[in-house]
Image (cartoon, rainbow, N blue to C red; front, side, top):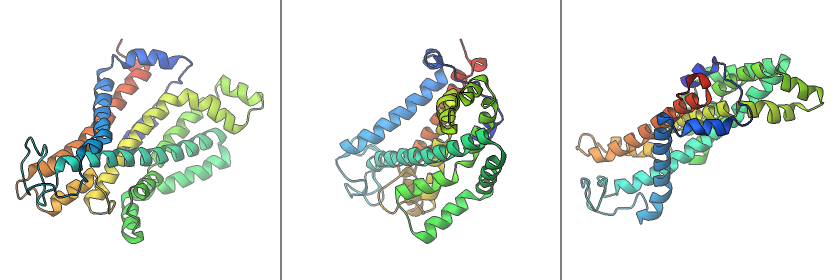
Length: 298
């Protein structure tokens, strides 16, 4: 998650009340945000609605094997006669599900650790910072490989949980750094003097002033979860049931699609992963320009 390392060192301006309305004004005029978000929403709609219109399970043998794209089979068929387009739309749904769950878990853990460490400081900060550093230096992909290979837990939900629990340290460090800069502000001191608890100060005072930053952090974790899940699927450690874009690539590689010239089997899932992750990062750049007045285009 090098992108989070990059934003960690940048001072993010607080989000004052009413800033979201102003941000919306600039958001609809930001080409990066509109294009990136448009691509993500279009693929999400295809992943949600496509399986309802497919008319067949993704792994069902529906036609002649190794058929090139045509009016009947839009993305052609596999060596077993499976419809690649049907697999693609089901794979999109799984890919988004892993991204949301894995990115969401990482975001929640990162926010809790980052907020508490940054606000409380002292011994609490040292303990949480040590925990963050320990998780940070662990080879996350290697841990996921070992867990998946030896525990035999191969469901989409379990994969998302493992990804989320190993992807949060960069988010925690970034949020901790921003919380340090906000905890000494006047409105936080006023809340503290009024007797508000730590939880209320974080939830009501600090977090709302970092809302745009937290949203962008979630987008980065979302994209990172998709990439990690696709890597695990490609090497054969993905879910044993269902289909995902990474599993489509793994099956295409296993059954020599490239050597047989079946480009329509591996190009759509590869392009789908690239489009989703690329569009998320383009949209994130657009959001940075929208929420940061120094980068806005008027």
